[in-house]
Image (cartoon, rainbow, N blue to C red; front, side):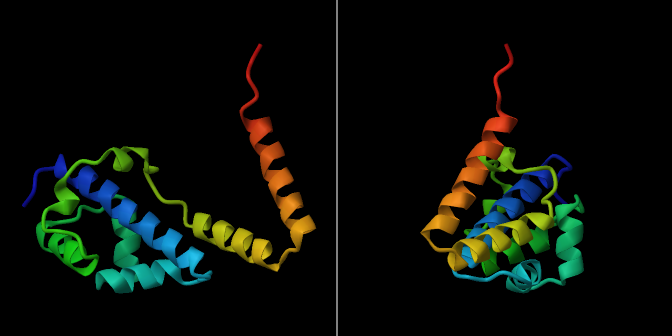
Length: 133
């Protein structure tokens, strides 16, 4: 069994794989069932994927299975990556729905609608990152 120090590394790398999968699927037009499809890609039940995201340890056999099914070399999940440090401690399940809704709205909008979406997002960002005086 791997040391306890390896578990957060594996979780972070699994979240990298998940984000890559979500980005690819949303770009291809998928909007729903992404967690289920990701768990199917890994060859596990959706409930197990949910537990792994929340911190259940990824043991050796499962780590090798995930690497194999995602086309990564053996040991990939065990290597620390800077990207993994940027991942949230837990993946917000509503994130994929928001991205899917935004993509759907963007695709259905004309140039004026797209401009309104961009304006909203820019204004929202300005409100969030206002410098303090």
